[in-house]
Every structure is written in C-alpha cells, then in structure tokens.
Image (tube, rainbow, N blue to C red; front, side):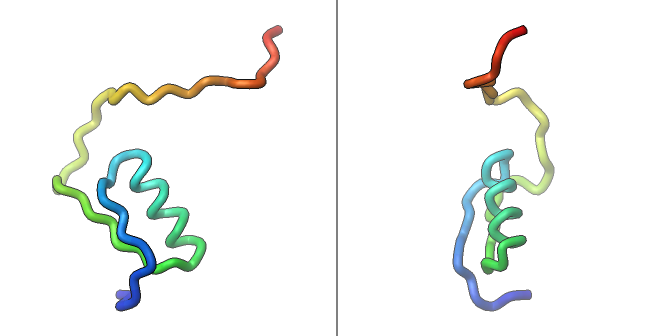
Length: 56
C-alpha cells in the first residue's frame, strides 16, 4: 500500500472510478472512497453526444 496520497476521489461511480484508475496508472497515489460495498447497476442519465461526427 502506498502511504503517500496525491489525490482522494470521493465516489466510485463511472466518473470517479475512471478518474482514480487513470490517475493511479499515471503514477499518482490515489485513494478511492465509496459509501457502498456492492455496486448497484442503474441508469443514471449519462449521455454521450457524437459532437463533430458526420452523418452519412
């Protein structure tokens, strides 16, 4: 375990876990805090817009 933390991420949802993973892979000391032990899969309203994509 790394005793030196650079970043504490609160929330292990899609955004928080992605951020924590990318920062850890980049060499940062990361602590990820999540309230629940088990992941509850649910739709949360995330939206991906294909901005700049050309329609065929």
